[in-house]
Figure 1: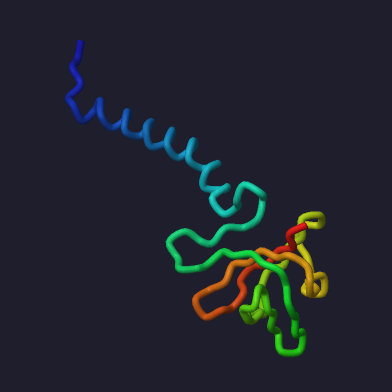
Figure 2 (figure 1 turned 30 degrees about the vertical axis):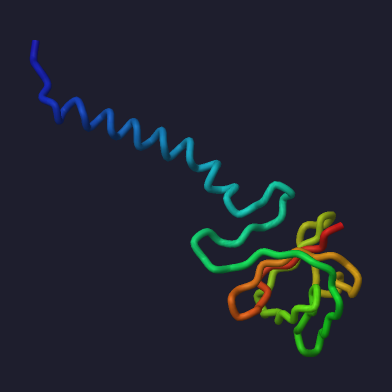
Length: 116
């Protein structure tokens, strides 16, 4: 009977542990960007801000929106969401409606969704 040294026994165990952690952690990583209510969360490790409020005014020509007395700008890559349709359009966001949003430090909206 041959004896295995410590390295021959340790490597397969470490490999199996790595695979188990990877497979168990994959579903958690996929859900990291969505909150309890199903709306997006800011990226981890950034200074993005998540907020919500009532739309006071929306200025399509200037690509601006006022939410709870704060002015924000839309970007060409701003993502729009609704609770019923998933992806949305800027034209669904009207004064008086409630919205959630994620902005960067420059006051630019990265993601916005209607709260119904």
